[in-house]
Each structure stands twice: as C-alpha cells, then as structure tokens.
Length: 329
Image (cartoon, rainbow, N blue to C red; front, top):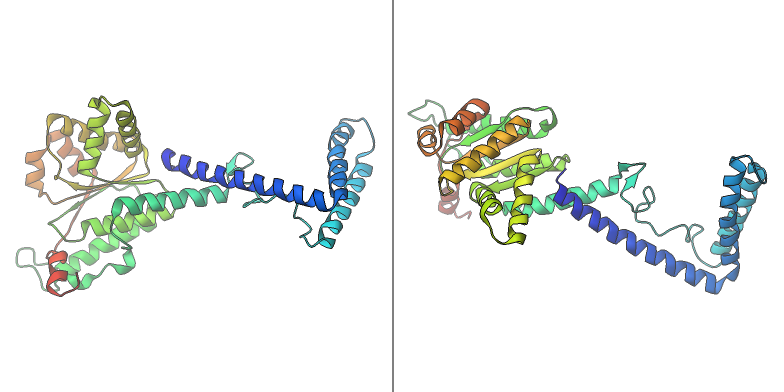
C-alpha cells in the first residue's frame, strides 16, 4: 500500500472516530439527564467487569452468576431506552463501523472500513493526476482506428490496436498474477495515455498501490530530492521518489518529453532498475522510436527497456485530430 495515502485514510478514520466519541458522549448526557436510572445501570454493569476478571482467576463470585446479573441489567437498560423513544442499543456506541469501533483495525488486521477509505483516497489521487475524466476499458473506441491494412506493415491499425487493447485489458484484470512490464510505443494521440489510465484505474480498484506520473514530473522529483535547498520541498520530493520506487504499479507517461541531462539519465536508470530488482511492475509510454530511444538514453537504460519490457506498438492516426475533424472534441 502507498504509505502517504494510507496515512490520509487513517487520518480520515480518526476524524470519524472522534465524531463518534463526541456523539456517544452527548447521547449519554441526554439519556442520563432524562432517565437517571440509566446512569445507575451503566455503573452497575461496569462494576461487574473487574468482578468477572477476578472470578476468571479463581476468586470472587461465580462467573455464571455475574453473567446472569449483567444480562438482567442490560435487559433493564434496553427496556428503559425503548420506553423513552430510543433504540435499545442507543448507548452502545455511535460507531460508523461497529466491527472495529472506528479504529480501522480488528485483531491487528486492517478493517474493511479503512480499506474502503484507502481505496477512495487512491481513486481521488489518480483522478487528480490523470485529469482525463472517466476513461475506462468500456469506453475505448476501436472505431477511431483504420481497418485498412497499413502499406508498410500490411496490418490494419484497428486489428493491431484490438490486440493491444486485449493485452492491456487482460493485464489489468489479472494484475496480481502478472509479471510483465510494458513499453507503450507510438506517435501522438494513439491511445497510449488512455489505456495507461484504464490500467491504472482497474489495478487501483483491486486494491494495489498505483502511482501515475509523467516522466517530466518523476525526474523533477529526483532532482528536487537531490538538490533542493528547501527542506520542505526536499522532503516532499523524497516521499514522491519513495512512492514511485515502492508502489505495486508505476505508470510513467510521456518518456522522452523530459529534459535530458546526465543527472536525469542517472535518475531514470535508478528508477527503472530499482523497480526491476524489487520485482515491481511498470508501464512506460513514449512517442520515441527505438532508434530515437537508443540515441537519447544510455545503453544501460536501453538494455532495460528493450530486454525487460514487452513493447506494445500503437498504430493509427491522431485520435484528437480525428475527433476535432468530426466535431467530437
């Protein structure tokens, strides 16, 4: 899980717990003021707890007797609550999640309520990063790809993209058991970012940690981590770098748009290599051809990209331009 997002979810859960505690306190104050006997009953029930502990250790009154007395007191308590127009369990806690009493954990394991908050935080984070709207596999339209064979390859772009789509779809749905890394290669506007977003959303929906960054932003984070004189900015950059290195799936978009320097090449190699060594999965998209990639990056980087990533070639015409021509933009 992404530590930053988990911290957000825990903070949200703690807010929920604080509100529940406050609500519970107000309920007790109201109930005790109207029906003083409820306070006495609660005090008597509470007094039985240490007696039960002593009985379990072999001292005091028999445990069965204490249990019967507690049940009688609880029954009277529920009776009084109902008589006064409240639910029988109105003073048993105003928890949003009774399973964990809004702590987020049950017997040391994450409760489903905290997991839900984490998933929501990740979905918000991805939506802010992607800025693409509601793209999904279900809205991917093969109709924008020509069904006539390309003269150079002899393969119709639509047929090629149908294969690419199927690979991406299967990869996302079966992410937990997959080991592949992918390099999406092709010109501008062919659907690389769209399908990357589809994969990100589906993988995140399954509960895996996903980080989606442009190559520019990713390498800027490395640079800030190393060179920033502002402690706050450096700390933020360090957390971003850690997230990119540790997440279950990193999607690095638009490789080749970043400024190339000796440091950026080193940072890119570190990012790719550390994820490969950690067996973390990565999807990279680029407009660069194989020849352009070889010219732009070091042999070590090219070796990782060509040897450890499966290349998916995107074909067709710029979909954004086609939409504009058809008045769909």
